[in-house]
Image 1 (cartoon, rainbow, N blue to C red):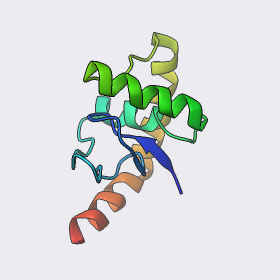
Image 2 (tube, rainbow, N blue to C red; image 1 turned 90 degrees about the vertical axis):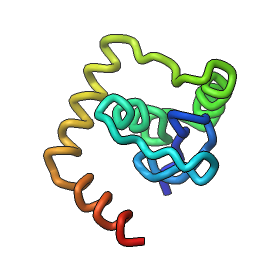
Image 3 (cartoon, rainbow, N blue to C red; image 1 turned 30 degrees about the vertical axis):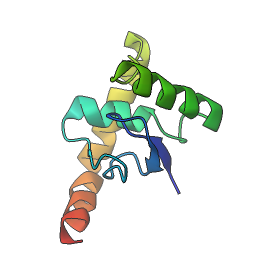
Length: 96
């Protein structure tokens, strides 16, 4: 299971790219997907995810990635995107 923080409301949810069960937001743009990927238990432990969640709830926006981290996450995202996994994920999500 992938635990992630919703980029819009800060709710802890299942899956970086899945719709939030709290606010129904789903990352759509590359930037939303990159920050959603970053705010997951693949990269951060629960205490840090909780801090990110709290930040979003207090500031109504996700924490900003530093430029070097953004490059790394963007590269990781581009690899996921190129693999076709996102297309398959979103096709499956549309069917339900």
